[in-house]
Amino acid sequence: MTTDLIPVPATVRIAVRGGGTFPVRRIYCVGRNFVEHAKEMGMTAPTSKTDRGHPIFFSKPADAIVTDGIVPYPPATDNLHHEVELVVALGQDAPAGILPVADAERLILGYGIGLDLTRRDLQAAAKAKGLPWDSAKGFDHSAPVSELIRIADIDDPESLELSLSVNGRLRQQAPLHQMIWNVAEILHELSRLYALRAGDLIFMGTPAGVAALRPGDEFVARLADVVELRGTVIQY
Ligand code: MN
Image 1 (spheres, rainbow, N blue to C red):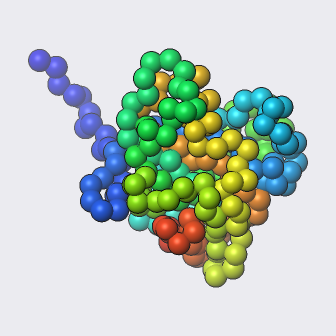
Image 2: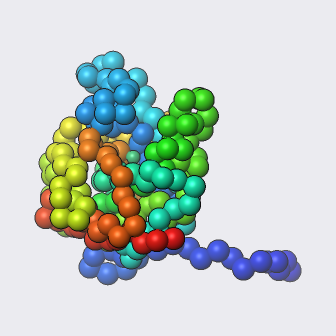
């Protein structure tokens, strides 16, 4: 018999409206999914479905999830940015092989709203040198997320609007139909690269309006009137 030599890390769990919890396995993020956000970052973005190539993906560790809205201001940055995003939660494993777009929705357990918090100064430095983004994106407490809403309880989330207010002022607002790749297309593209499994979360990318958060800031992220995430940034 073998013995664990250290304690087994706790599984991160997100509440599901109506009961139960969602244990998180992996977090995949889409890097550039709104044209206006790509422009504000000084990048070009595809303008048609035929010339858009493949999306950019990166990951965060599962234990970056924050479920109580309390975000300690992270170390090693002077420019912590908010990115409000639709969050997709997978309730089933994908079958072997590449997932057809038409089969993608059946994997989805539900949706939430979240923030892809970003150390923008570290990201800019990494981009300038052609280096990886990990320290800019995958840090502790970098993925606050709302409760999840089951797919049966939400009518066509991609027809809805997401928004973010900070200290009562609107910072980001956009309809999800503006996404360059929709949810089913993103699951298809992810399946070319990874074996998608129950417990995986996908952060779908942010619209324009990203900006800095400071200690003391209070934020409210909303997916229309379906679900919201309230939180605050505290001094580390
Ligand atoms: Mn993002």
